[in-house]
Image (cartoon, rainbow, N blue to C red; front, side, top):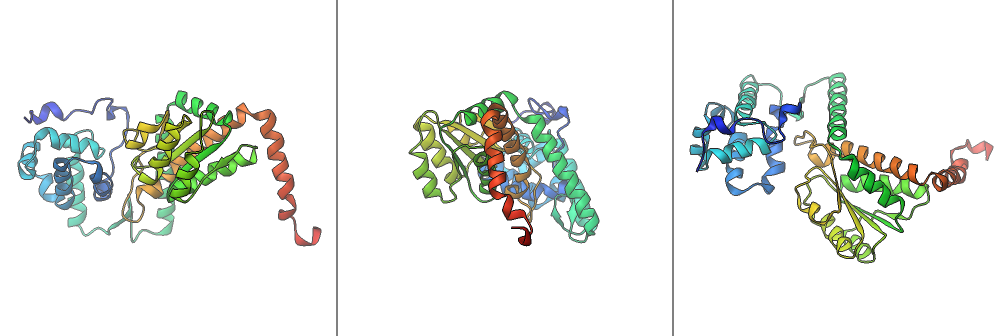
Length: 314
């Protein structure tokens, strides 16, 4: 049974009173597309309804929207919070702003607050601000105890596997390249079958890491599960710590849920926060292995130095 809208419209537990900003109106439709697969059917109805008719829904109370979607008031409020708003009151404000933008004929958004007719100087400034916020949010939300434990596990690992698909695979390659240069044995298989093949060879003393913004990428979860079942230490870097990937992770490092749109989905914009976590891990490993890492890094610099000299000086 639905409860009174007033009682449910306060900040979510652990709530947004700590300064977390709700997504901008222009990002609402993309947010719905990203999160809909992980929602219940009733929550999907609410999310799709508000994204499809922001003007109409902005005029509805929580009771009215629950009636329109055939759900409960509690479902409406839970959906609002899952979309990033403290409560339904905040979602209504975003819907009203989105409806006003549409009515005014504002240029459609390319990503977050950037419109198709924005000059390049504005694009640079807005993206820089967004990236800075993404990094700040990730840094504020990182569990440093988990980060320390992950760095320690990597530093002492016999072998390291990093699994990722698409943009997350690029982040995994970045970490592996860094680890190789300080003398660690690390792999970032790009083929899902090869990832599983590698994972079943792992054992206690090895580390397997999965990078997935959604927390539900099957091609990443499958090798992590195989490594977990064979006793390797498992680490997940994800924007959804409640996702399936966390079931097979001994350690979970949470990244910021980045703002997104059609042309800049979460898989792209989340890479900024993933790279921050990767850099933190690498520095943590380098600190713990400095006596061997420094000579190994110097050796790689020396081995590659001639490739960066002018041709005539070789």
